[in-house]
Length: 160
Image 1: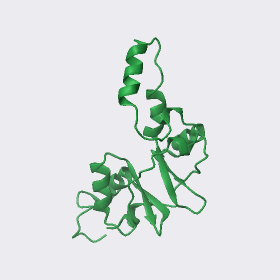
Image 2 (image 1 turned 45 degrees about the vertical axis):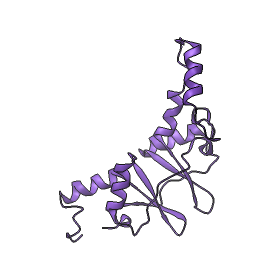
Image 3 (image 1 turned 180 degrees about the vertical axis):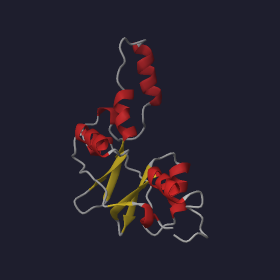
Image 4 (image 1 turned 90 degrees about the vertical axis):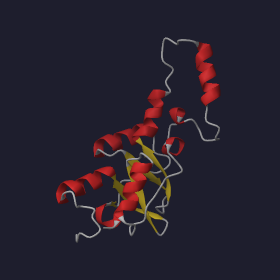
């Protein structure tokens, strides 16, 4: 079975300038855990997931502060060493998205997608064909196939 057989074709996508509040509304409205960020030609630039947006809540300066010294120490020791903007302070998709995104091709076997999802503890993968986004495949897609086809759903000897 190929990724093409289970993926969601023509997924919802957003532009790099999409505001964070709009991204949150899209995730909730469509009941999805992530949305790809593409340019006008459909090239994948990144992915914004619920996890990227949770950075905003996790980075809030909790009141009352235990200690300004502890907070400053934590920030200096654990601060990202990359030039990327802090996701907690980002206002647009381009500022909060994950740029290094694992992808699969439509012709990849579904086990390739399943292994990436499990091995990297991610919930969905963009599907790329000819350098353009053509779909998304998620853990939910795999579970749905399992529910509809039983325990042998991914057996390579089984005919669709």
